[in-house]
Image (tube, rainbow, N blue to C red):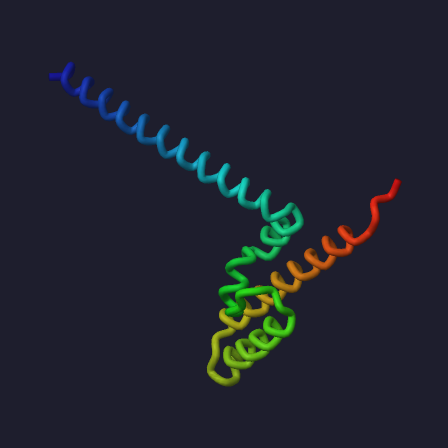
Length: 125
């Protein structure tokens, strides 16, 4: 009886061990894919996402903008900020998300402007 119990425990540990190893490999692969995607977006953009806690896509979804247009961003920001004002029955949480999204998009615009300036400057020799 003890022999069978030991075999069941060992077999169960093997199954759990294999499942854990498979889950770990999947997590590493997902992490590598996310790092590659951040690398394609540029190091500054990835750093801005880490600092703000929002990705560029999340910020665009929150402010409902498809392209980085300063006028459209400002217009949508002002509207959503007013609508979510606590004094008119809005949510402070949503209002803060709107502010963070605008900050993230403003940072992305700053990064793009800086990259454009660097491309326009002739290389120093």
